[in-house]
Image (tube, rainbow, N blue to C red; front, side, top):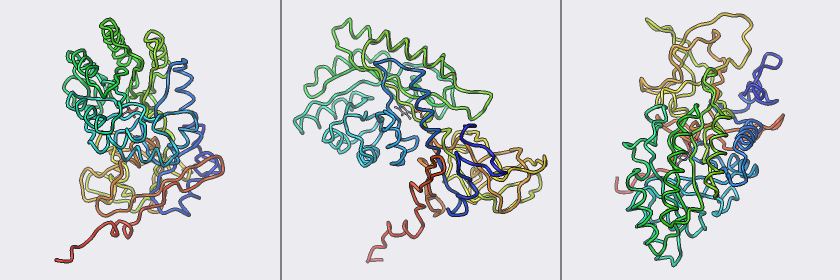
Length: 419
Ligand SMILES: *Cc1c(COP(=O)(O)O)cnc(C)c1O
């Protein structure tokens, strides 16, 4: 991040664009993303995992703006989606079905049909009833659906409970003991073409060890299936690589990369990674303005114009997002604040007990590392607008989603004529 975010003439700049200058023309709060940071994250991951048979599929849900999808596709990424809506986004960004993998535990018949119609590369299947559903929909359309089974390797990724997905009590994947049986069933269904296995053990994992353990389990089960005569040609190793929300806990990119490369070599088939956060997380900034500084009985509150509907991660995941004053502080005066939004919820905060340069009403604050699961998780709670997104490249910037105003949202609604 530091090579794209820094002070120039006392003003915080993303690449060569001053955030204060952006805030002068865009209603705060807003998100902005660095083209260079996304590009660099992609290249870093690609270099760390470089093997001929390793393919990167971006997990669209992390940040699903069309411009971000197009940029990552230009860099060479395929896509990993979890809904028909995300597939529609990919198609709108000019990405073909063949480059898209459909993950997720709850695909509907309509979603399956839509994906088959657009020649989806593969479905990652998470249960026996889903196998049956895909077989049935494919039969109706007279096609064969390429699938992989998502296994649950029962690995503790040592991350936040709400983002661990590879333990046996999670809803995700097919339990370790049921994989061989499920694969046998899949290979008997006439409208399915089983290609292999996938897994995804969780998110914001900064150490290599959980990945190594999970990959080792994957190798075991793949060789068992191969011994049973199944042709395994594609294996998904999931996403989950973390970013340095906390500079003291950076992700072990090299350790992860080595683990991927070694596993990919031993598997000797097409291997996919599904990173979301790592590719876009550090590239995004939420810019917000201080509305009030409020002295409570015990605490000082920085009441800002961004809220939990704009960035849910602090309250949902107890996530830490670094923050910087947009105008470089001239002195060392610091204060400890709860940084809170205007929403009527105690959980509406961006940071608790955060020591920051002393700020005043009207000052701008940059919430960093907000590119992943930021705008993508935003809602209109409290009838707030969906805030703008801006893409910055060098000195150039463009609004890649204008603010969706409350007036526009009202047009979505209808009062019945009998009322
Ligand atoms: C969310 C998700 C990802 C991406 O996770 P990150 O932690 O953002 O890399 C990858 N694969 C699947 C199946 C997911 O659900």
